[in-house]
Length: 375
Image 1: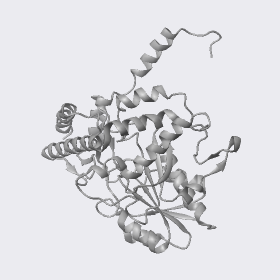
Image 2: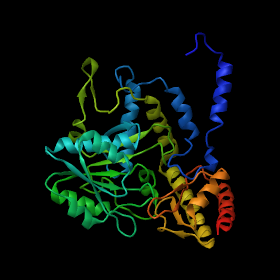
Image 3: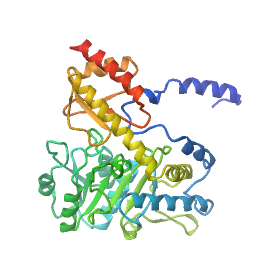
Image 4: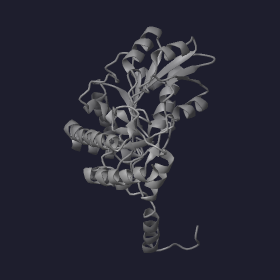
């Protein structure tokens, strides 16, 4: 730290240079986050000093959090759920498995997750002392139910299903997992961090939420397709008794259930604002547009000789192309930010709300040139 301060003008000039190094959203096809809604940004700034780690000082913001949880619950198949706004999917998944572990007293607890599960479950297992058992996938990259059943034993404390997998945007057969969870009295956690703001607005009726009796908890991230500010995650439980397992005594006779102590109230207020502003119709318009552009991209890619790994379920398109590493490298040299799946190795595109039809057309034109170059 400097002995003397630096002028605001100098700092802002330097930070402008730093910001210029970042990837512009109109070139990004690799992120599950998008540019926050302008209203969310404005509200975030208004609440930037609020701290939900001290609700005695910020009761109004705490009321907003309760309203956000109510709105999330109604989106996810129930009129009442219990939860809080987290820093994102990782915290939510850790906390959900923490509850599952503490509900069952097992010496050697294990959790059965799909092989497609997010790496946050690896973190959760290490932190919580859980054995992570990975069930295989079917030919469509959904968790294989027979594999799940074979991995369950008397020490299994939880099952996990994914509603919007990281690589392919696939939705696991949550209804079947729910039946298993009910029959064996096992906690079922659904990671819908990405899909939670997409699936409810699709034409297809995918069963994945609290409408299924066996679903115990759900992760959903407003800072992804919800268009809120970072960090705005969400964790919901079916029962208050489940959430009570997270409670610890805090200062001045208060209690906390969050993993972090200090918590931004700004992200809560931003989430509330964008929920109220967009409403279900607004989110449906966003999802419809993203899915329409995904179909456009799929059709054009097929015409270029690329082969989709699966027919897109959500707004994620994985394409098998010749010399994929070289294709990705050449696209990056043209300042397109894309990614690859692992197995099979494929070009992975996420069509988020910041992608317009014009931007998509420019990208697909470059993709065509690159694919021709590497043949």
